[in-house]
Amino acid sequence: MTTNANAALGKAQQGEISRRAELSAQRRLYRAFLVVGDAFVLLIAFTFAFWMRFSLGLAVSTDSVSNPQDYLVLSVLLIPVWLAIFAIFGLYDFNTLLGNITEYGRVFNAVTWGMMAVIVYGFLNPEFVIARGWLIFSWGLSAFFISIFRLFMRRIAYRARRYGYFVTPTVIVGTNKEAIALADQLRDSAGSGMEITGFINVQTTAPYGPGDQVHGIKVLGAIDDLPEILKAHHIEEVVVATTAMDDEQLVRVSQQLTTHHDGMRMRLSSGLYEVFTTGMDVTTRNSVPLMSLKRLRLSHVETLLKTGLDYLLILAAMPFLLPVFLIVALLVKLDSPGPIFYQRRVLGVGGRPFGAFKFRTMYVNGNDILEQHPELKAELAKNHKLKQDPRITRIGNLLRRASLDELPQLINVLLGQMSLVGPRMITPSEHDLYGRMKLNLLTVKPGLTGMWQVSGRSDLSYEERVRLDMYYIRNYSIWMDIQILFFQTIPAVMKGRGAY
Image (cartoon, rainbow, N blue to C red; front, side, top):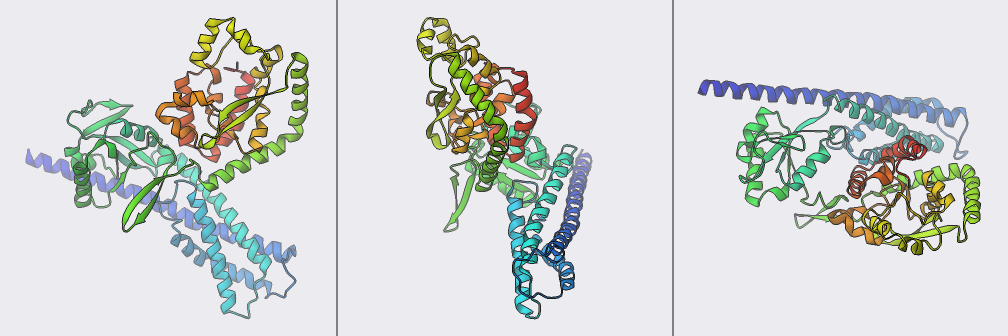
């Protein structure tokens, strides 16, 4: 019996070593592609900069410069220096790769420091006069080309993750609400890089036992069995739901991982994940790490990209939208007496109220009309929508089905109150219906379109709308906005499903 147990343990250890070696080899291969690709892209950027400065004659100043051929030699010599700077900035470290957009910020900083190295070289070598045009072009083109290359490599890696490459076997310690929320979010291995192998039970009185399924993920065992589970399943990362365990259990898990599992990474949740989505800043005061919640979900860079996309698309579409805008305004005015626009009081970022513009689609005495239909009034109070609403005008019906009634909200986008894509706008009275999630909803701008609209709009239950809003906020990226705008919103509007 002991011999069999030792053999099984030895086999598990060999499997663990083999799995780690395989993942390490995949990472080395990816890192090698990055190094070779970065070198090639830098050579292209430097060559383009040389061509723009010395072939096209795009000069910043008319000062005399060194022999142009010297820049070609300098470019070749600079590449290994820049690659070393990239390594210093963590651009080949998997703790920063394939995560959020901070990788591109690191690219910008590394390229800037690379240019500083060129300036220092020019200072130390007075005979070499640097052409400012070449310097500026090299800096801008390098940052742009490297970022595009990194984006391309990231998409390849994300696709490969769906086939089991570049993913880390992970367990989640805990089976409470926070642990389940963490698993649901992290199980998309393309974004997280984690393969959620299972849960570890913490409490003996927990409703789940070994072999049970929680949201499709197996409970592997109890916390006392953690060392054996980690070896048997070749686990490399342990995510601890801090609200699932007490201090003594947390210390014990940490000691087990530190003592018996060299190289194992333990990650602690904030304990507030299912309530807050804004992320946290960690600061140190007298060697004490302190966490503070961010007020907004999006970083400054993400906000800048999102705002830039909004303005760019609106300005590009303006020549086509203005005639439609004028025609619809005329039809609204001719269809029924009253103003052309209607302002709906809704909540923006941070809970600040503003008036969302819409073309008026109801009769001005709509409330009086609704009072004549108490059953419809009760339905409206329950669902916040009516399929057959007697308050809507003839042209209003058409505008709603084509989503043209929301066209004036482009004004709100230009005013910075809304975005083209975002969670569904809500009124102050709806805010409390989001329950514990209401703090998350107001961390981003509401959208003209969003997950809720492309998934069925008014046909969705209120709970489903809340879930979609939370999914968008938690998983936001500029690529998700582009996908929703161009590949989902247009077909949804054309079909008109759920529009009333």
